[in-house]
Image 1 (cartoon, rainbow, N blue to C red):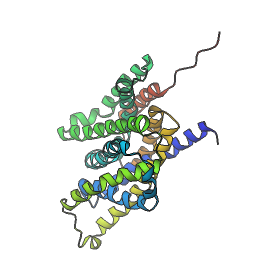
Image 2 (cartoon, helix red, strand yellow):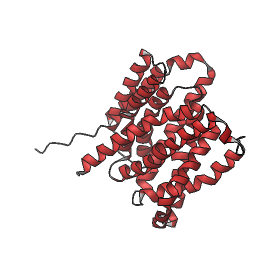
Image 3 (cartoon, rainbow, N blue to C red):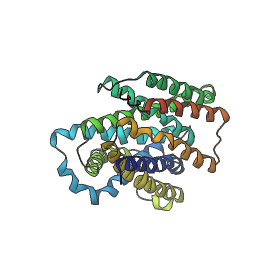
Image 4 (cartoon, rainbow, N blue to C red):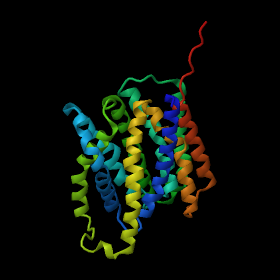
Length: 296
């Protein structure tokens, strides 16, 4: 299989998986608090990965562990809680569209921290992308001051993803993906468990509550596909592409999320479709490669 086909195939699969994750988070919140959902997502993912991931830890150099820890918390730990809180007020489809900010943040970090070249069209792309966000959340901005806070949770999560994309590419690119994923979740396991213990989760009798059981089923699906498998695929994609290309899942991901949201009865207004289109145009300009110069 050619490198180009592998890149695009992985990108499409990731888009489908991650685009479906937001509706799973929403469903998981029916019987759990955001804190409980975020903690269980980390704990269940660690358990799922452990049988096949523990042998890969030996391939991680000791001096790289600080970068694995940073990747763990900005790439998984904080977003798990931020998304769970955000979706108590913001629809799953709008949440997914807001994550489209990730390539814009990724570009800015690549430029200002790692010295990547910034093209004029990419500057326009960033400006257009943020304009689309304003159009998308226009109704939310005037609806409630609380909604603004929850929107900022999504923006912060997107920024965390952008940091993670650059850390994985520039600091952890030669390390086996499964090793990074498992070590990351080992770093997060104890903090997540401690947080769960203080979240009033009913450890002794949760099996008697149908809502909690249903939510846990959604979390297991989310942990297996949206976290464990997706993380491995994402790191593999980063190894054969650039950080900006790797976060281009945002092209297809909102379409998938909107589809699931509409099936679940969520409302998606015309202005929000327009905002989504503007955002994706901005992402396109940011991620589009510079055309090669023709030979004289």
